[in-house]
Amino acid sequence: MVTEEMVGRNVPCGDDPAEHRAAVREYAEAGFDEFYVGRLGPQQEGFFDFYRPEVLAAFG
Image (cartoon, rainbow, N blue to C red; front, side, top):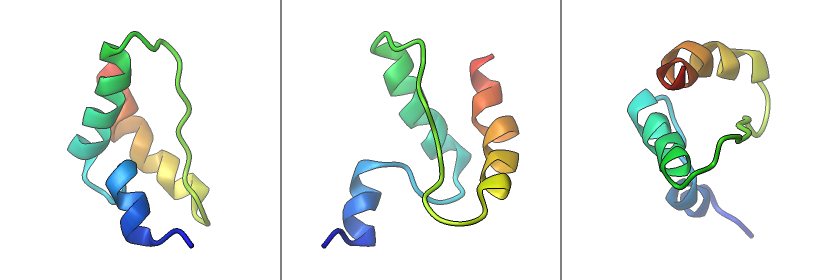
């Protein structure tokens, strides 16, 4: 079984935009020019309402 703690050690979770931006920045600095983000579970629209201005906007 995968626990919440296990997931939290490997992917950004929560509502701290800096944590999410840092994770995306790692991929950008490694040379990735395309990546996909998503939310596991309900409230997909709310996730993207947060992610668009708080995280993705920082990457132009």
